[in-house]
Image 1 (tube, rainbow, N blue to C red):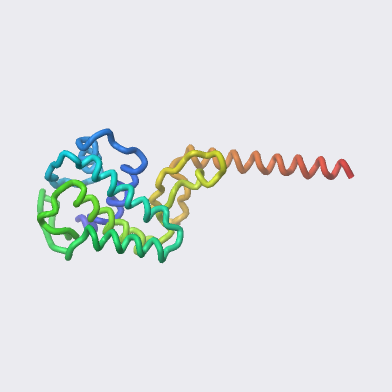
Image 2 (cartoon, rainbow, N blue to C red):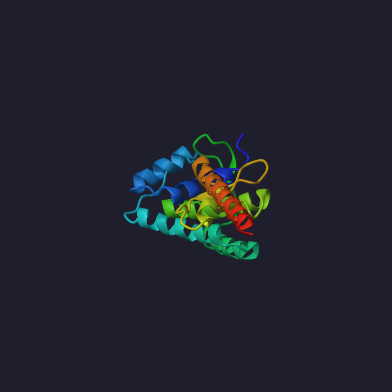
Length: 190
């Protein structure tokens, strides 16, 4: 039973595209398949560029720090992309809701609707703070800007990977050791 096709997978798909941009339209479609989308998309020559624009617009929601600003941006995205919910049963998925017009089958249009509604569901059910950039990038000199979709039970995921979490832990450890050394040298100087 698939209760919410617009929830977690939609946000994970958006983050996957943002974090590792595909080379062409076919690679985008492959990624949608890997994240559970089964529908066929109407093809257009500029799909790759238009999907990039959809992802960039979605990143404005990720980067909004204030929950009210995040909600305002996301509401604007949903107005532009979504339609009245409608029941559908396609591709042997079982009955589920679509939040887009039935004739909106282009790759960019479908992804805009899926990302906006999925992100809204993710944030309202899990918490407005559970979508962000990797905390490793908060440290000066760390280049990581990957999107983190927090789907953990405790809601404390801050890093995109174990690698980034370890790098940040090493930096904190070294900073503590340097501070301890500095404090010891000040104490000896007195």
